[in-house]
Image 1 (tube, rainbow, N blue to C red):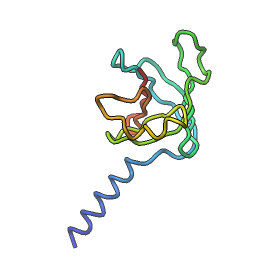
Image 2: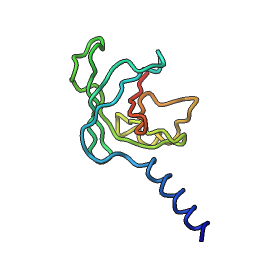
Image 3: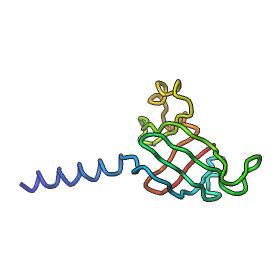
Length: 116
């Protein structure tokens, strides 16, 4: 009986961290892999598996609050939630690994959006 409850608890934890957030608007840290740090806050809207990211203050060439990126959320083999900007690239999304790395990904647990 203990084994059953341990298995059920583990499965529940695993599934809860693998889910996309409910549809809505959130504030996330905007992080840049080139500098390896978060450099601002950005607004993110999620509806189903679609995502829209709005620019934080301080980005060159784009005003704060303008649409920065949008796309479809997919989980790749490394476990990262990546953002596929173009539906034609969805088939290659599963081929990304940590060495190649996607250009856009989101960490729901830490509330961070990463770009390169």
